[in-house]
Structure formats: C-alpha cells, structure tokens
Image 1: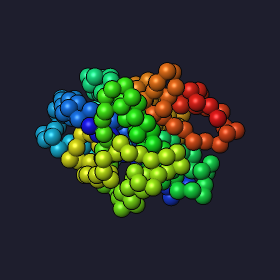
Image 2: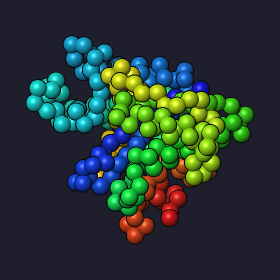
Image 3: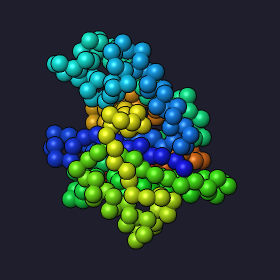
Image 4: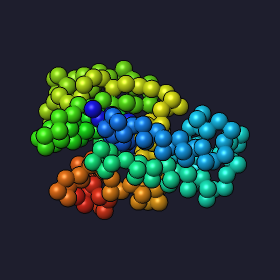
Length: 249
C-alpha cells in the first residue's frame, strides 16, 4: 500500500493570495518509517529540549513569530531547516516515493471551489500512479492522509464519490477508503507534506524557487510527462514550470 500525505497552502477566502495549493508525498508503507526518521533526526539536531514535539511547519519556521522557539535560530538557519527537511526524502527509494501537487489560480477557476478541484486532481493522479504500478506487475492500493480540516466531511464524501460514482475522468478504484484526517503534530508525514506545499506556494505565489528547486524533479512522471504536478492557470499567462512545460495547454 502507498500512503499519500497531503497538506494545503494558501487560503480560499484571502483575496490577497492568488493561488490555492494541495500537495504532498506518496510513500510505500514500509518507507513511512524512514520518512519519519529523517525528519526526527533533523529535529533532534536543532537543539530543541523536546525534539519529538517540535513540529516542522514551514510557515512557522520561516516567520518565527514573537514567542516562537524558532526565533532562537537565524533566518539563514531556518531556511536551511526547510531545505534539509525537503531533502530528507532523498533517503527513500526513488521508486517508492512520489510527490504530488496541484496549484490552482483561484481567479482562473472561479466560480468553482478550488479545494474541490485540487482534491479531484490529486485523487485522479494518485490513482493513475497506482494503475501504472498495476500494469507493471506491482498491484498496490492507496490511502490518503490529510491534516485535520474544516473540510473533513466534504473531502471524505468526495473521495467516496470518486471511488463509486466517479469524477470527470473516471473512478479511483485503487483508493481503499475515504481520507484519514490526523493532527499534523502527530505525524511527520503530514509535516513533510506541509514542506512540499509551502515550497510550491513560494514558487507560484512569490516567484521564489529556492525550496521548489530541491524537489522539482521528484513529482510523479513517466516518459518525460509530469503527471504528479498540475498547474491550473489562465491560458494567456505564460509559465515555464515543469507541469506546464511537460503538458502545455
């Protein structure tokens, strides 16, 4: 089984932000331990009195607001923590880890709910990855794990509909159940997904590729076509990201 840890970045209601992002990492079940260990080791090396309780949340790390433990570290060190956190997945077998991400220009998608669109895309692309494994003689199923959210009930309902009724491209029979929602403080998998979502947000919202460049080649792909990263934008807006270069409008 593959576990797809997902988190979001950006706000649907914040008109000052252009994008909504849903992203994360899919890992083979036996690789989840090593993903957690890599981030645990990173936290242990930072000098926190309780490293196991230190949540690696990218925005909190970089912002280091008043009263935050992260203020003890320089900006340069905090940026390095995010970079090193993203790099920690390098220790996993490449065939057993894939990144997935959907970037939605909210105005271009309006009036459709960008969260529902992003989730539909993620489910479809994760299922496509699992179907490809099946045709390669490696039958696997998938389970989506998300950070706790006010959209919990709606996303569970959507995932169930995708498996039975279908979405605009078909069904997702390889997903074994509705998504599971967990507290991000309890699992490093969700924390890694947060780092991925933040890297995408900085890239697309701010034009800062520092963190994205660490992981840009890790999104699910086959034959030079990037399936794991999708950028929905106005067709008149030029973009040279891997998703748009691989599969232009």
